[in-house]
Image (cartoon, rainbow, N blue to C red; front, side, top):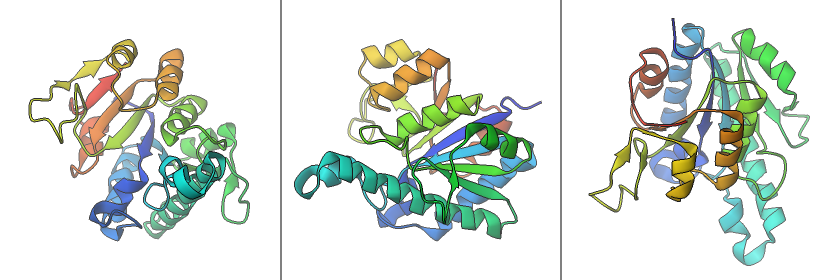
Length: 236
């Protein structure tokens, strides 16, 4: 008996770029698809939300030559580029995958409709949510929590470069202390910037647990979801 039946994985665009810092690293995306296939083979239903930071970062990119709204929409388009690429890799592996977008791009994506997404997931297919929330001023973390709640996921797994949540940046501070578990309230009180406040508030309101983990560790998804290893940090 596995711990979770339906999960949503939140991937950053940067995680798909690897050491290149931009674009898509083919080896990383192949590894990602292979790890998700392992979950599917164990009858875990998998949905994804992907950022677009490997192509364009809306908040930073809007600073000098764009207004915030246009910058955010450009960021949403970048998430669609990543989602379409990932869909193709799934299909090459023989996995039926769908991209549902909050933005209207009907020639390359499907309309966002959570009941249909649930139906596809229950058939063992992968659903990739793109286009963020479809609105400016919201991050893909918020989109991840929103989609997880909409499809009634048991948990959201947030992929990062570090193995959980710390009291300060572990890449800058050697004495940083890791939290094995932390409540939504504690995370908010300590001002831990692992996600934005809107995402935290939405997760708390709907009782959605979040696991923050190191995406660069091979086999990490199987270890957390199937083998039930206590890796990363659980926000509850």
